[in-house]
Length: 590
Image (cartoon, rainbow, N blue to C red; front, side, top):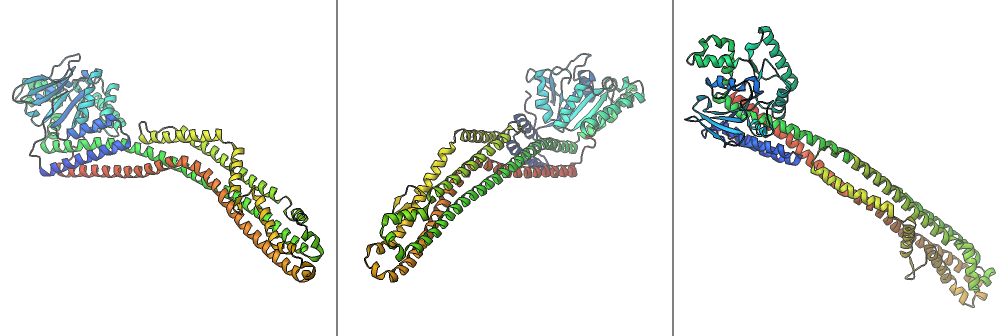
């Protein structure tokens, strides 16, 4: 590779140095953005080339096909043969021409040669002559990978014989579209055109092709480099007087090159060229960020729909729980009504025999009041458990399908860390939902829910066999408490007409009070136990989605920040460019 190029003069004007520092800060911030945007290593390396190129000598790169006459054109610029010419490829190496007090040549690598020449033209720049674009071998990628990205100005040489060939188009697309290099085009061998009209047709073809490729045509000059070199070699003091000079059309081209490479123009190009590359890199970074933003918005919409699905499942399960509690309460309320009627009808003198026969009283109470309440309550709770599990199973299946669909969506940005993190989370979530669907035992889960509900209710500190049994036990205990005094006393024969009405009223009131308390307790327990089962069922599925939800939320915020940063960097590049143009002018047509 070439030796380190000479730095810009230490006496750089303060305003130019300030702009240079702004560009360095811009490129540093751009590097951080490219990291976050998932830029390729090649783009990062090119950015590093831009940063290092800011402090280098102005770099003027000459490129074109081997038979376009590049070497002859370079020789014409110097007025002597500094490069070998020939009808076959003569430049098989990249040659870097630098200023030196004496002429000397150094081989910097197998494919790069550096020559020092005592030429005033090279005092403030380095000129790079490259192999033909149609004869570049693999190793010559140093041309595109090292010199072109760092070039401040690229002179591209085509010819009247083969104007804008396919290999030339490919190279120009790389130079301009990929890097936004400042470009000047020379259409060489203009003297070979059959006439002025034919030459103008060639120039129009080149300009039209460049406009179609790049949106606008760089400034383009027709030249006959061999005629110009002939004039300079034969009339070195006054080449303009040589008969070949006017035919060479070299005067306008040479004036443009030398005016473009004045001190202010070099500073303008030096400071402006990295901005073009910055905009190209920003454009690709923005494309990635826009793709990521679109991807994130799709994910956010899908996750929002999942949250709505969770809310729907919670609402549906709450309705199941509410319906179950209401149905159990209705059965207890009916039992309360039957019990009040039973006590009102039974605690009478006419039923004194039944009151004194505890076993008969209990049998009659069970027949008229309890009936099949225990079975009905347990059946209703079982139906509630089944309903909860059915909705939970539907939720698992729905979430599985939605997460699988998210996984199947095509990736938009290769190498994007967000994509990798997202896929890892989705892979785990899909696997877990599939496992749950394959392993859940609905019957066993229903039994578990029923047992949990039973365990939450106790009678006298002891867990009852079932919720219905608890109701029966508590209600009958109330009846025994109320009627116990009646059954135990012998005063009933003499005080029956006085005592029994009072005991009956008391029994009915105490009975309804206890049943009301029982209804409230059973309702509380069922709402708590079944509600917890519903919350747990939805929570398990929601927990699978939370990591992706968190990742997407964080990345959406990061994407908003990065897109705002891209806007800021683009505005800063425009501001620097405007300041460069104001202070040092803009190279027209370049």
